[in-house]
Image 1: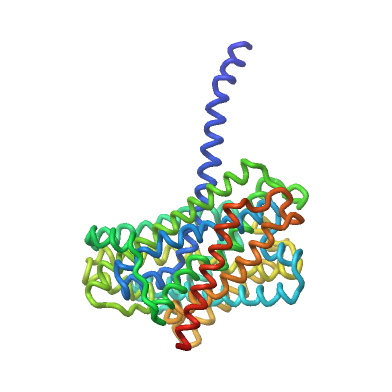
Image 2: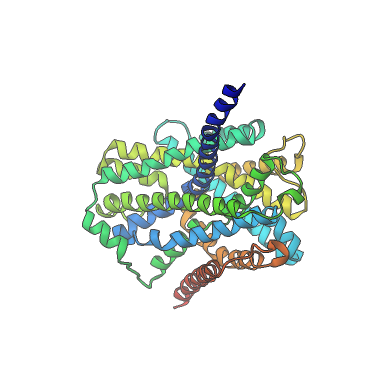
Length: 435
């Protein structure tokens, strides 16, 4: 008996270490999923356009937007973790309908357009590899995504998403194949070059908009809630509040995800700047066009890697956007939402996911190419960042919502600075339109 007790005692540290490793991998996985979804095909198209048009001199944008990316996603994650509800459920509790519904409508429309552009991006990228008409590829991808959402569990979706994030490393490989000049890379990364022109400010606002996209806020806040529900905390009273350890995990989760997203952003600009810009190919309309243009400059492997990256992250990002729109709409009307429930138990929620997906597919059959509007979609996202971030700052500083977990002084300084920078960028762009 004594030997058995001793054996159990000896194994306890191993069990605890294994549990700690499991929690760490879970945290890293969630953060990387959010980061990868932020680099969706529409974002890839925007970054590729920036790299092609301005070359390696635009690399400085990556370190500049990193703290902003961390800040906005951390605030949304903290809101979900401490308040126990997703973002639009929290806005509904705190603000009147005349504030809630316009924001919700704008977010849903933005998600539908983004999902349509991403489906189109996946279709165009796959079309480079498989001779099937793009619209039918779009339908096939949409059906596949819906099947996983309706018939797979939340745990299965999370596992699939983690594997799909590996596709993002294709851009690192594509940049290496481009063989950029290291001195020019260092100069472009460390020394910002700014031109006060409509084109340049448009791409700046577009990059900020795609890096700080609104669908990421709602996704991250709701994933904090989903994780708590998966742990058994189904009642709001069980989810309210957060320990120091939970908030430390959240900060680490967000930092890992945003660092991953930012590195990929950097390598997309690097790969296109070192090849397309250097060869005079400065006008890129889509991520698929960037992939096709890479082949004669960096070889067929670069084209294949770039295209596979678009496909992998697109299949990851589309359900994030369609589910995000469903979260926003359903929560705004006061209904419960959770991917931990089955479709038969949450018909309104899953029905909204299906409708949003169908609308996104339909936009690809209307005779226009949504990929051509990628940069403008990023600009629209950029214009939506200041008001959304303003509301998030108010909510995360509200003791009625956050209790003792209101923002620290450092978070507030970074938050209000980010709010001012994003607002200034959009105002400068508006000024250039009139001047």
